[in-house]
Figure 1: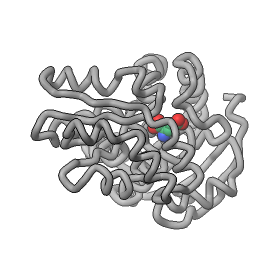
Figure 2: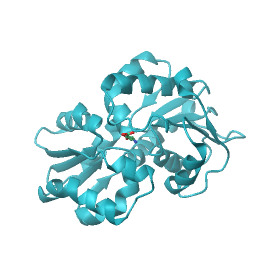
Figure 3: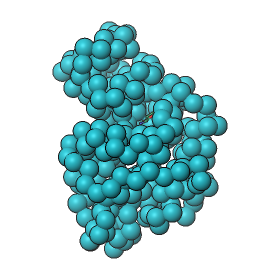
Figure 4: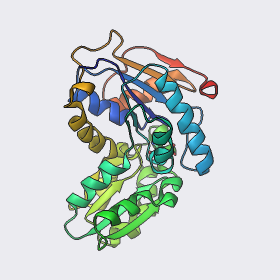
Length: 270
Ligand code: DGL
């Protein structure tokens, strides 16, 4: 048994899709969540800045003596994971890329996979590198979708403007005939309905956080990571900017009210 909380972080709201899955799959687990809302988006920043932000985020969640960390951010996972793993060898850290790619490679029938993500994620090539490690014959069609994160952060999940932007970004990938699309940013599952309708019923959409929690399920099977009773404060949320806005929009990500306080912290101190 290990009743310590799981640390989860993202640049903003997107990582709450991981918290939603944890709540569903592991009702006894406690979570410390950090959304770096003061510095979002990460996707347009340089690799050096992403690494620094990721280090800060890890230091912050580690201050709660968490038992493991989920980097619920495609951008931080694809650019900083190896380094921060190396720097924090004493604690398990999981990003979203591995589990997502594994699911996509298993899902594709026609060996045509689409990958979408932030500018930083697409530039890093992290998803394609790993796809090719599994199967060199897979055809990959990728594009960065920088407007998706602000649309999601402002609650435009399925509005006419969202549909217009989806068409602009995804037309070529759809026309290439992919049968699987990696939503390589944890904000994108909030656009799943609109993206799914645009891509058509035959295209499988891979949700990174859902895949990571499935992966976690294997880990939590071991005694070290299994919790029998939740903390008194089972879910704790921290942000680096306006807590009110986070609580409001966050409830849409979680599909339930955020119970408990959302606290603002100064992430630069970590
Ligand atoms: N959820 C983050 C990701 O998966 C959002 C990216 C951003 O902050 O630009 O990449």
